[in-house]
Image 1 (cartoon, one colour):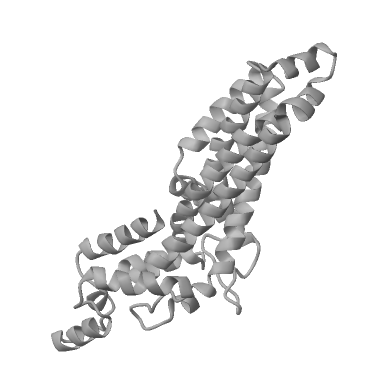
Image 2 (cartoon, rainbow, N blue to C red):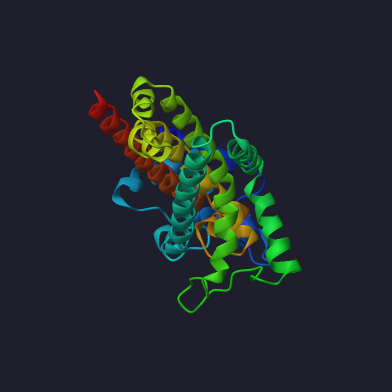
Length: 296
């Protein structure tokens, strides 16, 4: 499946107007120079030959060479920690926020809090990352001046201060928290109708004890699947968010690679993202298997 996906990446970049030789040419460079660059990059060869060379080198860890002559592995190594920091922070806040809101709403089914959480989470999930990012920029930067509008990097290439992480993290967290809150609330509602949760309630346990000791353990499989699903959406959102906030991460590199028609860089980012999503889905399956096995 991953091979097919990467083949589609090569084919899609081939269909875009222009090529890497033209996109990375110097101002005033003549046709002869561009043709020489095109030959150097192998763009005069069939796309399937270039894909075969790239995919057969991938198991050795060789991600190829970018259109600007840099090793793709080295090109991605510097911004990768920044993207990991941004994505992992947003992921942790998403899970904590969704659990808190979902449990809070489930403790008061059909009440004012439950309806408010349902309405708010639906609205948050419906908002694309770029809309949330623009709203944060207007409120927290332009109107109040609380936070910097763009990310400034320090000597090591990471954001100069932690405050530059706040808006990118929030722009990623808000939509995903909306999605996962609905997952948590729905899973807890399903568990509330099961006989063992009903029996715990009839035994006189408090609402908190029923939710945390009896309903939440049974809801973990659905929650884990929802969280794993949102990982792909979160990774996709980093491209938009990093570009808007000038954040020095993989998303910014990817946006530049698309402008350069730089197929090896784009394919490498897709391969790394697919590998990460696969790992998260496997972890979700492990949670499901462990939970369902324990209940069998």
